[in-house]
Length: 113
Image 1 (cartoon, rainbow, N blue to C red):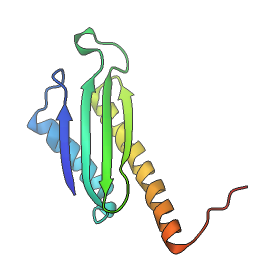
Image 2 (image 1 turned 30 degrees about the vertical axis):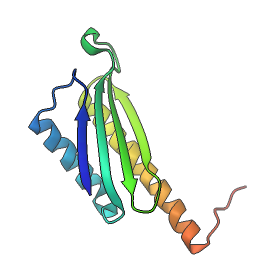
Image 3 (image 1 turned 90 degrees about the vertical axis):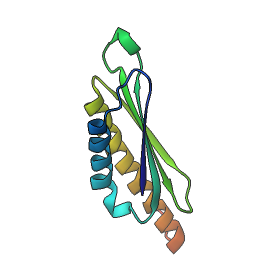
Image 4 (image 1 turned 60 degrees about the vertical axis):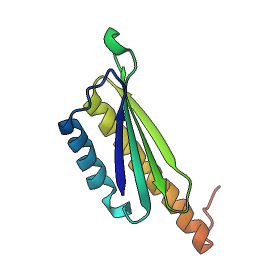
């Protein structure tokens, strides 16, 4: 599983930040590493130098072998919260997508009332 980290010109992409993000992604998604080919992480400062609440955004996209990608984003007051929020959302989205793919492959139907 490749992990690619991108940031806009208002976010300083330090090796420490990259290491933290890579460790979080690997630790969280390790059980899916045989199905995920790449995870892209995009970090943005929405208001640049102006500041403001919830002006940091983390967009994460997971790409799979044989399935379409899953993308989520989270906005927060700081990068740490934005990254952690996006990671939680991505984990849930992957569980949902892979659950649907498994159900489709095995011929199971979801019970909808």
